[in-house]
Length: 91
Image (tube, rainbow, N blue to C red):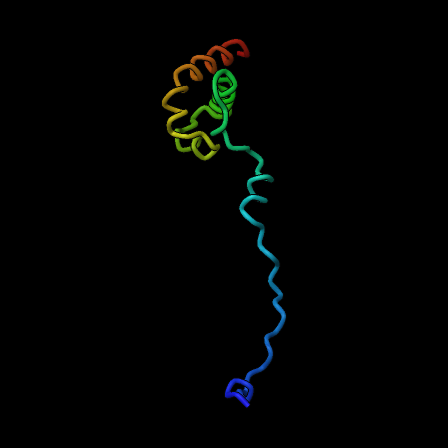
C-alpha cells in the first residue's frame, strides 16, 4: 500500500459555490456595448448621444462606456458640435 492510501483524510465535500460567469458571457449581457468597433458617422452620432446623457460627463465616463482614447481624440470635436446642435434643437 502506498503512503497516500493510508492517509487519514476526509473525502472532499461537494462545493456549494455557484459557478462564476465567464468574461464573454458578461460582455454579451452588458447593458452598454463597447464602442471601440464604431467608425465614421455612426461613431460620431453615438458619441454625441453619450455626451448628451449627462451635463457633466467626463472622459473617464466615456472610456467606461467603451470608447478608446484614440476615438475620443479623433471624434470629440465633431461629436461635441453635434451634441450641442441637438441640445439646441430640443430646448
